[in-house]
Length: 337
Image: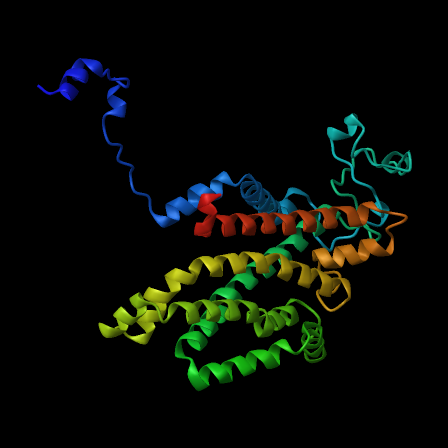
């Protein structure tokens, strides 16, 4: 036994970690991409709050009008310009039908009458009109997603993958369409058709997909020269297979993010057109129409404009929060933050 063995033997060392958990390898269970996205999305409190508010607004948009006996166009001459009054809550000092310190319901002898959002200058129930108008905003949101998913995504995939003269020709078409202001397009449709939801829908179909197509095209141009695409070509994959099976799954995250961010813009676009008189026309209801009606008497009867503005603001903020959450969940770089 040499001098080193004599100095350091087995008794000179003592095990510190005797727990078996530290002596075995830990094997972590694999997790799929979409399950990981779901977990990270649910960890985003803002996105979860946005989803909750969107579901609440959608619930009232479809069931809210049936909670009262009034329709969106029915008028009661004796119930003109009534402020909000909710049974039960009125005892708390809010939504009690008072305006400038005067209980309008008691003055008019309407003791058993309740309007949750009040009435407008024609005696129409604002609760019913607001939620019927919200249906229009949700329709525009759904239409914006459909246009982005089918027209914008398909156009960008074909243009970016085929390339060459076809890509040049398709991009010149986009430049021409993007050079025409949306307001001019809507005005032309209003001249040919009556102002309404059809004109707005056609305007979105013509120009609403341009931003999505450019994003998809840029992603395809970046991916189509990578090794896995070249391998699929070598194995004899068809063009349709390359687009749907190989390219689309790799850009689908960007497509979802762009679609979510386009929804608030589309909702505001419809409300703006209705506000300036190019959208739905009274007695039809949309949030833009209601804001326009309330704007005319905002100093005298502010309750007419408050409810549609609040619903529109919550809807747009909620979709923006969900879009931010989707972007953070689908971006692999956000895992490290």
